[in-house]
Image (tube, rainbow, N blue to C red; front, side, top):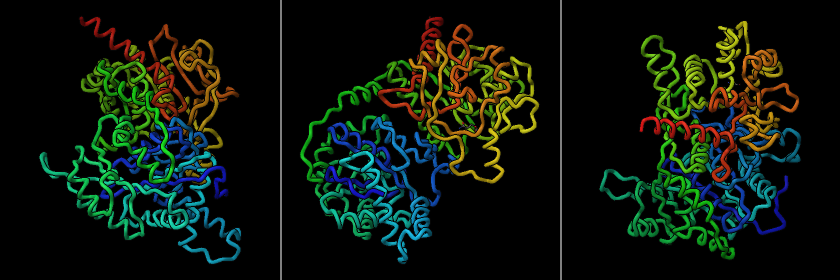
Length: 562
Ligand code: GLN
């Protein structure tokens, strides 16, 4: 591995969290990257996850939120998606590590005599591997500043070796390492003051690892006042101007703009002994304002099998879908209203089931996102049928595409038991089936990193909704699935009116299915996950067109009521 970036003096920023998890380290990290990038600085962002899993691919989304996928097929944390969205850059697996992946590499190197017979120890060899990976990612991106977010919270056992890596790096490059602590100031009730003591303890804990934060991002419900800054500064050996107030915001894209109000970019450059640079956040600010100021509501129903752990986990599991809707909405200047619809409601027979389905007419558009397993599938199929028959704009993402094909085969080809073999391996009509190579992997219980993962090309059929949306014939989108449209049924489905408007270059795999515009205003499903590459200023073309169809429905309904 390359360990030095010879062209420039490289600077390191580490982001770590205090007090509790979920305070928004990922967004803080992305926002810091954004404000530095907006000053013309070449940056790259890394995420370290402290768990033993080698990647995020084998984890249940209720455990870990959305599994994000990069071009190279790395299955990682959703923060990687935040970095890509804020920086508008495609990142690779080089920018992601877990305790598991670090240990695995060290152990494999030891097994091949890579340490030349030395005793390989937790310290220094694990932190050294971490540092070499950070350097490698920085060199690959030719970054002047490399920003690394350390998952977890200070004080827990899990991330101690990563903090040790920061300490070791700081000994070697005292002027080039900056440590940011994202902390939280709780409030006990409405008019109570934000409490600084937990942050003081977090800093003391950090001190115990040999580290002192250079900047504290003080998260809280409301902005924190001078008095609180003074308290933290005095008790934590810091300057007041290095305590940055970061209150809750409803629009996370405003955070870089807010950071700049506190001149955080200047502070960082000064601390890293870098010359000041002019910032240009015009486009970003305009985008953030469009998100904030949009008034015309567009109602999108998202049909899924939802998790009993509550609303928050649920939204986390579909983060990229939500963000893609926001990007497309900002493009049209509309305000998206998301409604989470439990697919099991559409499975109920009798009046209750019919009522649930009829309620779908209230939405301007419906999405069935990616998913796995049998629960709620019949409900999703019923919802898809309703949208197809009642011309409600429909967008199916991966599973949502596969199920649209199943529904079409059942209704339009009369194959009543058509299914995906994920649900019914014995169906007479396996219109969605597992690839033979996948079958073998499953038999051998090789589950980790073995799905069809990452970016694959697709060829789009001229004149279709997909080709017009992308304005291109050749596209590349990211995948994460094991099942595919069964080629045996393609001709029959096409004859019955379904258009496979996107296919793999070999034509073996179906990538996009749609209905012609004369038949339905927008009925599109993608085998890939278009949400993984949507960016604030470059919304994914299919999300953009879906939101346009939804907006048109909204306006038509409004006009018909007037
Ligand atoms: N369960 C389906 C498959 O494995 C779809 C996966 C998904 O939606 N990501 O092919």
